[in-house]
Amino acid sequence: MIGSKLKEAIRSYSDFPKKGILFHDISPIFCKPDLYQELIEEMAKSEILNSSDAIISIDARGFLFGSCISLKLSKPLILARKAGKLPGPILSSTYNLEYGENSLSIQKESLNEFKNFAIIDDVLATGGTINCVKSLLTSHNKNISGACVVIELLALKAREKLDFPIYSTLTL
Picture 1 (cartoon, rainbow, N blue to C red):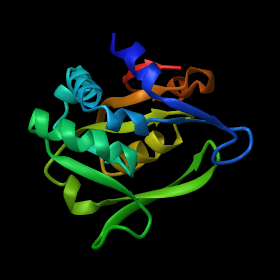
Picture 2: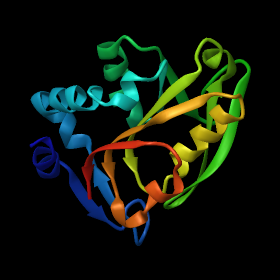
Picture 3: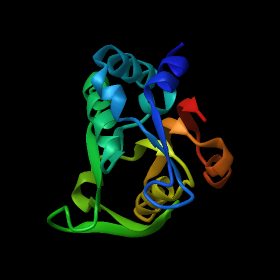
């Protein structure tokens, strides 16, 4: 049921942010508070999230889901930010996007108290962003219970590159 509502709300744009990319814009979801609430409720049911000690949410659209879900589940929220956005000792890693390259950072001390993490992001495309967070966590002997995303782009086969469970609210 929620899948069809999400499909209706999401807008797709060809050749954005560069030629050859079909961009799925989730922004209209936030203009529909009932749908946004229903999406948060649905994602929060995931065993991946419920079995984790903490949630890592990915900059920037992942924050819109991770913050709501962490409050709903009373789970700590750690932010995976783009380069240059976090003070203090950080862990950083670079990854490839469907349309370029980027890097993510996590504050080292934010990981200290937790062992098992769930990753939240808006879209699973190539898997590069989520794999980047995985490498940051595993380099510090942390476990990944899985990842939760709003949309999974099946044609890009990212799930095949990931060695942990994925929960997708909508597959395209």
